[in-house]
Image (cartoon, rainbow, N blue to C red; front, side):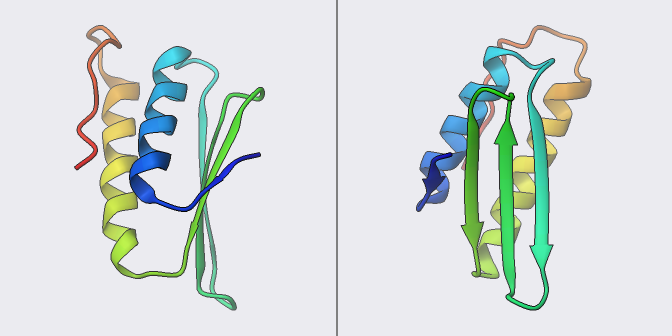
Length: 86
C-alpha cells in the first residue's frame, strides 16, 4: 500500500486509478481528532493509495479533490474528462 508524501503525486495517481475503472474505485476520508491526522484512501481492491496529513492547509486541497471526484461520479457524459488537480 503506497503512502504518498506529496499531494500532487497522490492526486494524479488517484485520478488515474479512478478513471481506469470508475465502478470499482472507492474513496475513504478518515480524521483522527486525537492525532490531528487526516487520511485519504483511494482503492479499487487491487491497488490502495494513501495520503496522510496533519497540515490544515491540505484540507482545502482534499475537499476540492473530493468534490471533483463526486462530479465525475455523477456526470452522465463520458468518463474521459480529466480532472483539474490545481
